[in-house]
Length: 117
Image 1: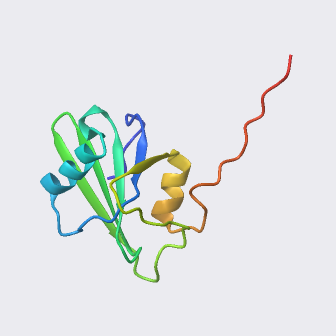
Image 2: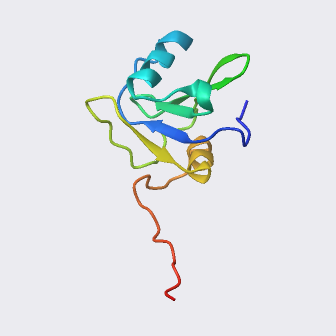
């Protein structure tokens, strides 16, 4: 399952989460960060060794929790865990890169061009 265009925002949890948690535990982590998957938000959790990803997503019929295990090596993303629960929003393109295991920096943003009138 890869969520379609119906999700409103993609959130990346920045703190360590116990990956033994199931649907209810991960939903509680989402609520701690002030995110409601039932409103169309997609939440990504990264394992402490950067070899696992869990994605929490909800549709009108229930809660989805998907996971991916990287078999070759850990993710190459420049990612530092926070001590307290927190999250950042990422783009759909960054989400795709994350799922592919590509190397990129999460915090770097390209300045947008604005035409001066």
